[in-house]
Image: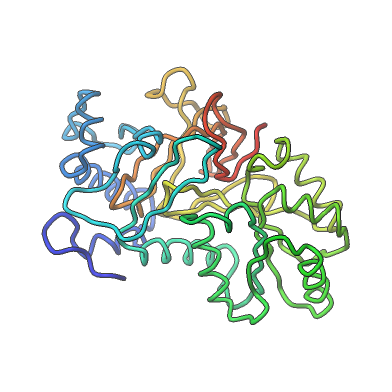
Length: 337
């Protein structure tokens, strides 16, 4: 882990704490600690709390924590005071839209987050041949998804792991070779490119793990997730299509091994809010706007109110159903449903 900056704002030990969370009590304790830190030292979040007239001394439970609207990342520098960042992730945005920027002073924190959560779901990257069909992301700088996938590819150690832009013929040949040789293979892909591959090279690849990353990026009409997954399952003979839920403004991911049902790592938790009242929770299984606590967002803001619509279940798993109207389609792993 990279050393934290000198001074009292972020002790080095704090960067280890997300990965020490082992239950609800530890999660709540760290969330409340970070709430106090950001209330005192995060100009954007502190201003938001003052606007709401929130006294953090009176916040005793995770459910009482206010979530910062994600749009603040589009026009504000959301970062603890006294910290500088050489790495910034930016959202893809739509043509002419204002993109979000996430300042990441400790890349090692992000790497530990995705390597740990990936490992818990799929084992070490070295067990896989990892391929990535992410043309829209690879063609621009600042993608957190590309950063993650390239690190996973490097850790796979497989000489044929790699990223692909437009050579669908070459990718299809490699997928067929991997299947024939019994090499465990995972294919990350943006949906429009996966559909292109399915149309041009349908073939039985029952052992392949397809990891769709969400969003058509304006290349195809949006479709519901069930339709996309059905097409891919039929084209490649896979029993399920996997998914990753992450976004520019987060340093953690939730993973789905099929059916669009995501599970969070221990340091991440998702809540659903009433669509008409952002300060009211909806019961498990009801549709609402998704709020995320990401305890790895130590430098920016751990409490994010997203523009995603979904359902959170009693066991903490969740589904993503679409977006609020008029919000940017930024490809953070959802299709309009």
